[in-house]
Image 1 (cartoon, helix red, strand yellow):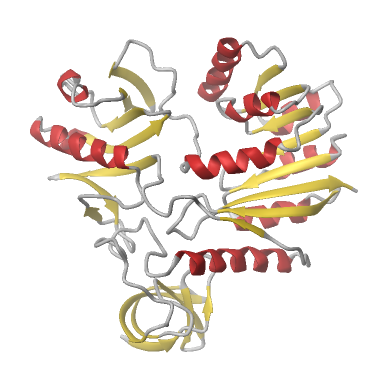
Image 2 (spheres, helix red, strand yellow):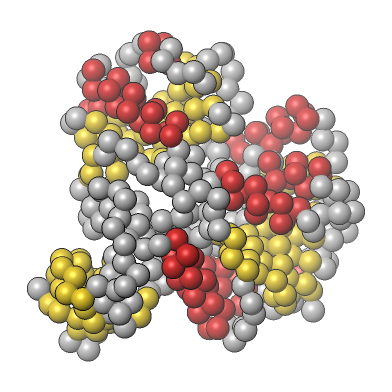
Length: 400
């Protein structure tokens, strides 16, 4: 056990102090607090410690509304008011920009919902139900209700957990992904062996559309649903906060008018469709994933989007193949950011403008530093993930 003063906030929102001349990160500790903590990870450069006791609390600390907070690893900021949480996120992003020598104002867009916003969860099987990972290790925390998951997701978790337990299927299920899309529930069961159970009894308790898949050896297979065809691939990407996603995409689409756009990492084509609806002349959707590309093709056919062209492949290779003059490039990469080859393809393109969407401030800052032919002129923070240390970034750059 050690005592330390929290003098700073880390890039993941944790409290930062010093012990034995090493930086010490204490998750759930706040700036200005004096705490007791116990080391659980030692590195050559830093120490990670678990908060045990608060000797002197910050005047910004509040009582967390969730009984699982600091046990379950899903949330970082339930012990802090929302405006203070947003201030920390803004400061984290400002620090990343200052490392690049950038001094630019940041607009912060709060989430309309602090709680019950999340439309996707991943849960793991225990002997008596479904659970989340612990905050500090790979142990599991069984919960009755998640305060950041949507009400429909919570209902689904409860009923699914009961069903799997009743039919002795928990031992055959490794983990479960549950999504809520357009008032439709999509469940993907990742299994060790094919499940032998009749899920028709399970889905009859739902007053919305529901579809169930099982994935064995990385291959998803449709089991049962409200009808025989589900238009949502179980592994397709979606933003987890519908309200904030709408605000973010509205911002992106404000740059679409009369432009030919290359939409990199375009997924199932939702943003490509929105860009066309916002006045884009033509949109090229570039996506590596085959199932996502197939979804985008289905969307194009269903909505008769003749000005949308979906190209399957790595953006680094497909972007240079576009023969039309591209006015605007939109990129929304995974957390790892853009590869060096993708960044080079963007630098080498003829596009006058670039919109970069990111859920990782570290990879975002790295890529902005590599985009030598572009200059950052506008940046906004969209709080896609309230109560966690994560957030979404919107950036507009112009060619120099």
